[in-house]
Image 1: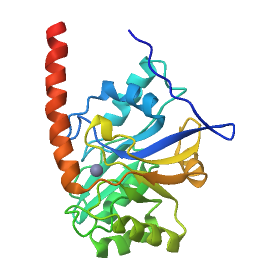
Image 2: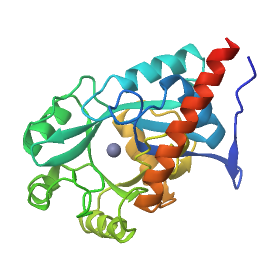
Image 3: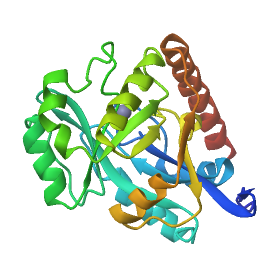
Image 4: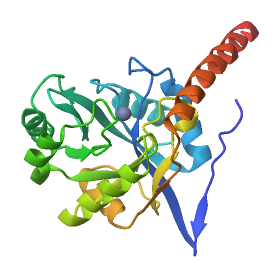
Length: 248
Ligand SMILES: [Zn+2]
């Protein structure tokens, strides 16, 4: 086996890393990214922390964390188990979840489930009217006091403007902000990030501390382009996988 590339980045002598708090894997119905391909990609892109936030599924995070441990990379990579939960009024993300939260609960019930597990409530792409599954504005107002983190850079919003609206909303409430690629392919993981001094993230407190010292950044992708690229990469990935299969 070839050694994994280990991309170290320093700023003024301090090792920094990227965190991407909104990613999808093969555990999501609409994504084919294999869990076992993710650690090498994380090292290569210096995305040393990701939250696995599959649609209405929580098992991807723990499974990936296990893979990272088996590879002996748990002192370099952190996996936050999360879920993008479909509530009765749109989606919400829970981070640091111990168990799956079922879809279809009200936003308030979903928030209590997240908090009961000691998790953090993250409001993602919450302000883009073209995001079909965004949390409805009335619901956002009702749960505003329970939100722990606001995603102010999502690579998949219809216009970058909606990220600025999210940033203003977070600023008004003095809430920590984060970035999420909302990746549905391997190569999209790390397209939006928070850059912060390197550390291993074990707990909500670790994450909040890292966010406080972080800078949000990312690449915004036009939705039509993003869709085309996902189709292309999925197709390509399939060819590559078939090729690997033939080599045994
Ligand atoms: Zn998502």
